Image 1: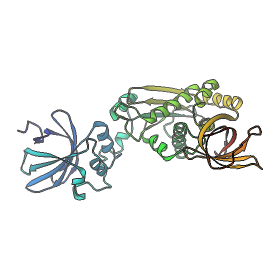
Image 2: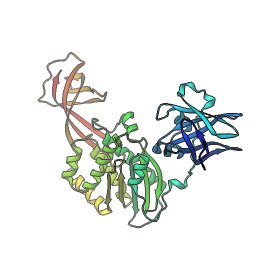
Image 3: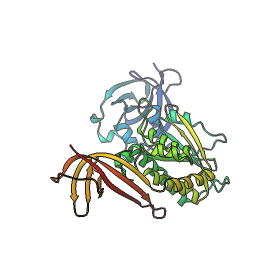
Length: 394
């Protein structure tokens, strides 16, 4: 029996209440809804006849938000249900009070039953993406609700409160922020070349601006896991640690010693980007597990940080051990070629006091390298020198 104010009653799902109308053509054809125990669904009519056929997609709040903001196509949502199946519902066209439902696997559906692959349900438009509250939104609540990591950057242009920014500089900030996160995440790497799978796990999405001088919001491309954790959280934590260290080179060295050797030079370049435009930054970071941090970095902080890094850490030297294969040795020029176990090729000089006694190559080995990283401040090109200082065959 259909309850008062419910739109449908379905035997396996209960009373259905419409939340958002998505597609309406003479009658409601696609909508979001919930049942009387609070379970959320997207409902889509697949057959209009005296007996209508509908697909009901059970969906979490976090994924529903992604779908309704156009972050996931309707086709992907229906073909990759979170619970592993859909509900097929049969209703009389003139009576929605006694629907019948059965579970159905995606592979049992025809393409005609599914939304077109290009369709997105962006029902909110641009208004939702712009944070216009006079008081700052609670970033932690947003992160928990969406189950995504959030990073807000507030840029104060030339010590003023201008709400405009050069498009070219905005693009530079977005690109280099993502690049910093990627390089931080590639801890086992030896340069700025980050594998695609690491870039995918740490991808940030620009989702809007807010009134805070010039503020922009970045969020994770993926949802956090069931424990509200993700690989991106560690990368963002290190990023915030670097900003928080400011001109304390001891703290910076402590942080970067555990990371890819190229992090330091890219971080210096990142700070110079803001110094060049005389821009101060404020960062706000929140995770779905309720962790929150905010850090202010003034133009003076940026200037002092760069000065400390330039005077005390001119070139980043680091020793690191890799497992892999020694594939070539040139005894005349005292050089080598080595491929790590993550398929990164290294080549460089063999130190004079290292003797290589076995030349039947390639051969599995553990090798210690001295890595020297320099970054051209004008071209942004990275120059890395490798010295082979220890070698043990396996």
